[in-house]
Length: 566
Image (cartoon, rainbow, N blue to C red; front, top):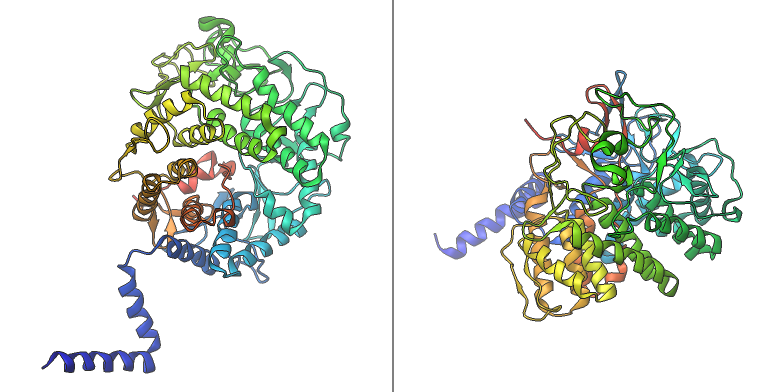
């Protein structure tokens, strides 16, 4: 048989399938296409279509336009939180802000508005049905909407954000009044004492709106005793929200109080080193800890680091001064404050200086460039890496060892962003060590100068991609772009499985809030010269924390997103 006759015979068979067996033809096409690696944009579109097709509410007679937080990859069933024998299907809008960023960015790049429209409908529904009368939303670390029962469920009647950092730009496009009201209610609920800025990560839904920005303020000494736990992960959400409100409404009070709160963490830094702090207050000691034996881990016994280590390390032993992992202070907090400083321009100069001063201090004392690790430190610079805990307590059990941790990738990003905004030579020096520590090669003595990048690296962390995108903004040469493209290819290779983005193919569940698709859109937009079309990622991440029948009091990260196939 000739080549021509073979060709015509194949075309005839194909035509038959297309005309008379379209379903079978589509299946054959899908099987053939499955072996083809999708482009970055195609992969994001496959993911978002999967979420639209399988992640939307259809669990009761009257479905809503809401999305489930995640899906089991193998059978596309929703994640379920088990509590007292009841299965909850979580739809936590606070945990879907990156999904909405992805939807908005994909619509902007492709022109297909179905993604953006889906985000609009979900947020509109949330504003119409999830709002307490004081303006807070039923979402966040301890509450979510259960798609199985149509109820709000969770642990306690309290609001909590910790580096949630919502997509306020979009929320305000959908409903400006509700967004502004929420931000004011966020501050109203979480500030316990405005005069000294005692703050807590838990906020009460029962609170009525107070005086907000008209309160008096007096600078209190660092580590005053207060009722709250002034954790920087919760404080950062307040700082960010206040700055955003100021940019929207011009409320000078929102700007002033956000700066005051940001300065509380600066004011409490160790005077010798400029290091710290995770919190700027101490919990009031309502009960005395026992003199011997295991120490209680609740804050009603006072500062838990002081209780566990005070006899060994003295006055520096405070919770605020314990620096075991730098990601919170020098990663998440640094990124959002740098981004806010850039948006605020002249009004953000203090914020820029405070953030860069803190980051450079940690790079001096806490960064082990030789091993690309982060030392365990007290804020006075004391290296406690290798320290063996002598008594059970909040920070571990007797015999546990404080170890150096691998450099968090988010700090490469914050360092690259800080350098781009400041040109500080010490930041570039540390960035060069970090790049090589992550096996990305040498970015050069100066941006783009004698760079020796490693395009054969195996990294697929989206936060590393965000760091390299900062380098691309510094230097328009092709070397950094090639490195960014390789990171994107690796993300597709290592983290894109069955239409979802996950750390690996052995994971059981996929979160709809994955950062990878948003990072790929950012890369695509940069390559097309359309960076303004894709929403900026600000390091925000949602979570849920509460009692689970099989895990005890745990997080969705532990129950769902870390779960692997046996």
